[in-house]
Every structure is written in structure tokens, then in C-alpha cells.
Length: 421
Length: 204
Image (cartoon, rainbow over all chains, first blue to last red; front, side, top):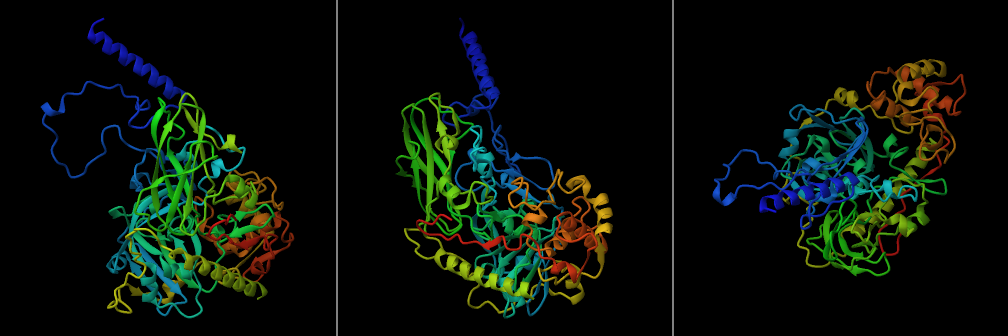
């Protein structure tokens, strides 16, 4: 067999393996293992050291074949798309794959014509254009945003399907650098009157998303954000300006913000009464459950990957808390029987995300891997059984329980929580 | 007014709880984290007011201030009956909510069982604590493809019809700025304030 034939044969074998695996919908490995999902036969590229390179350009692009993608659900006005957590590195989410949750679609808003009305229990009702807001002293901070419905797909016994990816389960979560003006600066400008205790934030989309927020939060660390990761905030994230409530559920961080009313009571909008409240087993429902509690997810290995051989692998994941900094992340590689401290990549910022890593020598046997985060208040990410005990299995929102991935002998990774409960 | 007072009490509790949370949040910072929280971003020499932006005339505020509070503040003039609301519903609502408000494909509106057909039972009869929310939400966001198309009379009417389908108001009910806030919703007492807190051993 000539060398050329050998090459063709191995290429044919590679394609067969890859297409079979892709057809099975399972196999994918990280960069240091064979990438079976790329569906690109390795081409004999010209030696780049012998070919002049390309010139500079005004706008760059990702490397060929590299484009992480959101998981876009039903094409409907009220819908969501999830960030590809398994494809991302570090903590920052590229803005074009930041998760989406819209209740009336993405509005087309002109930055130059957009106005924010601030009124109610204030000394001076005022209208701000974007140029006004951008002239105020600016801050930039790193924060996560998580939809409080994140994780719903894997919370109930019936819902724990092995074929669940970290993207499908927990992809309503992203982290960005947000740039804007503290809401406290604007409230100082208008002069909040005595007796005020809440604000109503209202969006300029076709759902006019409306949420009541305690004035204390508005005066604490809330932002009017107009920038995201070095550029104007994306339309999907609320262009030209959104409310940022660090550590709180995404829904309350009203996008396309056009009105703030300072009040002395909550407005009791639909999305703080019949939605975004947490029904409990005793028939009551928890309201104004704003804070996102500590949580961690393993992003590698996770469903969609396969470990091609035993030996050294690095378990990688993300952890965050809406109550402050992540203090500790532990990893179990034996189904939760024993736990080891993962390395938490600093700096750990408040109400932001950390990347954690744990070096692990896989012995090739069946096992489940889990992670659990502890935040600086001492709160430990609970098990799903603990949440069931506290809230019931029929609750909704705030599913921050520990997750588990099963690693089978053949290296295939699936969502494994169902086998542990 | 009883409702307004209990609302104010709830607010006070909520604020007390939130104060308890936030005082913890930035305490106990350990390790070598070199992060400066910039909540107090304004330098000492910043003026009390910068003067950027424009004062909003009352007419401008009135044009945009369309929310409705639980005590009825913000409700416009107008009225509507159950019978009128049936017509509005047939024209504007059935395509998404079904002939009797139960068929979907979008949210189920009618039902009174607290856990019936969960999780599809976030119905008006089972899970909406304030009737005023129906006005606030309908005026802003419904019908989904043509939000804002309904007149005040039509909005009151369709709310009367939906409340009647849920068995909350009688067939001869008329909804207006007086009667709507007075409707006592079955789910009014279901809601409790968030009692989750941080800290060791806390699972709520």
C-alpha cells in the first residue's frame, strides 16, 4: 500500500468514525482529544511558514470553523436561547452568544431617539437621552446574569434525561463586563422623596416588561448599563440601556429600559406575581425571590463529550453566587461519596463568575462527577433532594442544586443526576 | 384600604429581609482579592446635581405613566361588562388562549385548582393575587401581536369576562376603576415573601 493510499484510508476511516459518532449525537471531545464533531476532514494545508499571511483588516473574525452557537428554542415572541457553556473558556461570555430571554421579541430602538423617564416620588421628574446618561460618571463591573428558570429541565425526576447538555440545562447564564452609570447617581439627580421604598422599572419592548425593585437595591449596586464587553450593549441584551441588578434574577434586570417610577409600594406586575414567583409544596408561593443563590456547573466533561482514554483529565466548570463571592468549589469524582477542593481561578469577584478546575486521573470505570459551590456567606450549594425537601418537586425557578455527569466505561458522558436520586 | 395597609406591611417586611441580606453581602471578604467595589463611584467633589437631562413636563409623565397599582391607582375611566368582554375575547384572545381560556397554545387563563394541571395552572383563578394586574398587563402587552389595541372599555370588559370564566365575578359584573380593585382574588393569600438567606446550613 502506497503512502498515499494509507493516507486516504485513514482519512476515510476518520470520516466513518466521525459521522457515526455525530449521527449518534453523542461524541465530542475537547481540543486536546480528537474532535469528532467538526465534520471537517483534516485537509493537507499548505505550510504557513512558506506562504505570505493575510493583511490587517478593520473587523476580525473567529478562526475558521470556530463559532460557538446559542441553542435557540422555538421561534416565538416569548422565548429564550442558551449560551454554549461547554464551548467557552474562562468566565466572559462572547457577546454574540450571551443567553437571551425575551417576552415580546427584540425591539428595534434608535439610540439617538431613546429616552428614559424617571418620575414618581422624586423632586424633579426628568427625561434622559442616551447622551445624557453617558455623560454621568461611568463605572464598569463584571457580573453574571442568570435567568431564574435556569436548570428547570433537570429538576424533576421525570425531567432528568441523560441526553441533557450543560447548554440545554444551564445555558440561561452568561457573564460580561457591564458599563454604565450607577442608578444611585440618577436617583440623586432627580431627588428621591421621603417615604419612597420601591421603584418600578419598565421596558420599551412590546411586552413592556415591568418589575418592582426595592429602592435599597436601586441605591446599592444597581446600574443603568449601556455597554457590554467593550462595546454598546447588544440589542438582545437591552440596547441602548438596561437595568442591572447584580446577583439578582435576570428577569428583574429590565432590558430596553424606558421608565423608572419611584414608588412607596410594589406595583404587583404580572412578572412578579403570576410569573417569577416560586410555588411551594404547601400551596404558598414565594414572591420577590430576587437573589440567585450559589451554584456551580461542570462544563467539561459534560454531555456531548466523550473521553477517548483513561488517564489525566482536567474537570472544568463555572461557579457563582448572587450573595457575594464564591469562596470554595468542591468536586466529587465518585458520585458524591468524597469531595476534593477544586482550584478556583481568581480573582473571585462579588456577584460574578469564577472558573474552577480539578485535575483528575480517570481509571476508566463508570462513575459520576459532581461539583458544589460555597459562597462567602457560608451557603453551600444544596443537593436536589434538599431542594425537594425544602420546596417540593413542583416548585418553579431558582434551581441551584448540584448537578452530576455520568462517565461510562466507553468514555461517553451523559447527564447523570437521575441515577443518583 | 385594608389591602393597601397589608401591602405596606409586606413591603416593610421585605425591606427588612433585604436589609438583612445586603448587610452580609460585602462583609467577611477574605483572601488576596484586590477588588474595589465601586458602588460609591461619585468622587467627593461631584456636584449634588449635574444638570444633564431635562425636566419632564407633567403631560409627558402622564403619557407614559400607564401602570396600575394594586389599590387601583392608575386605572383609567371606562367600564366593561362580562357580555362585552366575551366579544372582545372572541376577537382578540381565542387564537392564543383557546375558546374557553384553557386550550392554549399560550398561557392557560382559567382554572381554580391550586395545583391542577401543574405547571399549566398559573391561572387567573389559582395564581393571580391582584385583579389590577390584569389591567396593567393587558394594557401593556396584550394582544401579543397588537399590544395596546384595546380601548379602556374593551380592556375592562375582557377582564370582566376572564374573571367570570374563573368564577370570581358574576355574569352581570361590570368592571371599572372602582370595582376592579375591589375584586378579591382567590390567590390573594398564597404569596409569601422570600425567606431565603445566605449562610451555612441554609436550604430554603
